[in-house]
Amino acid sequence: MEKTIILQSVFTCPKCGHQKEETMPTDACVYFYECVSCHEVIKPTDGCCCVYCSYGTVDCPSIQEGGDNCC
Image (cartoon, rainbow, N blue to C red):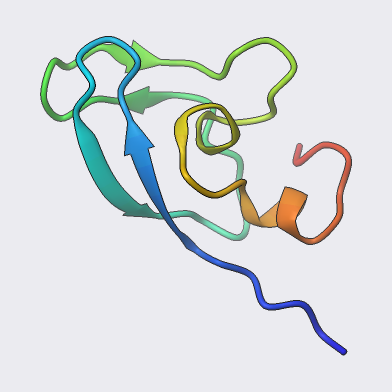
């Protein structure tokens, strides 16, 4: 049975709190994200592989598939 991967995640900027729904890529990690509101360039927190695992409502597709590290 194949696991359903959720590609939509709501990203919350840790600087200004702005939220935006994004579609996560399935073939690449997102290590940098520029907030559309405050223009801060966001990086993952220590121990996280990408910005979606750090600041999104859903972990990245690689982690959802059961990987230990997405990159």
